[in-house]
Length: 207
Image 1 (cartoon, helix red, strand yellow):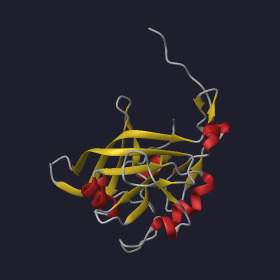
Image 2 (spheres, helix red, strand yellow; image 1 turned 90 degrees about the vertical axis):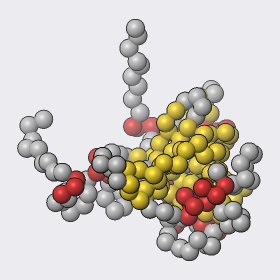
Image 3 (tube, one colour; image 1 turned 45 degrees about the horizontal axis):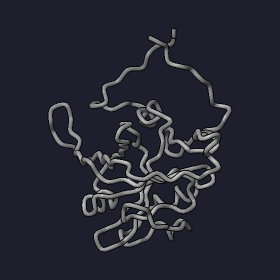
Image 4 (cartoon, one colour; image 1 turned 120 degrees about the vertical axis):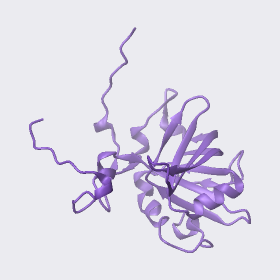
């Protein structure tokens, strides 16, 4: 690459119209998290800092930037469900991130259906083709390099039940593109849809 490099130190600001960090680390899968308060109030919210972290046992995690309802609920119950955000559900997913009071049910707000999970007490989104029921393993408040705590919390959970639409299993293999997952990009409104045109294959080198 021969372009002149633009460099900055985040502590001093990026000096650009919009912070490029999210756009560079992306597109990212969306943590569409359903949770429930100790007194049974439902919550559904998308998180753009989300990913999978382990195979056995399967562990996923998301980060709450600031203390939000999802974090409070999960601390109280120790459970949550991840729901796959797809292109057909994009508008409903977006509606579920509206800044509303804790007693507002985002399932109802987004026109979605809450259905009981098999193991955890938190319901999942009926309309999504994939969902993970999770039990919390760790909740970690993040900190700076100088050990100063920041108001962000990483929530990690073990996947204890998986739900997959049969149509997405082709000869027993999950078809990622067929689910049309949406991914978060940079900027205030950028999303990407994953489709078969984006697929290429590379096998790991053999020892």
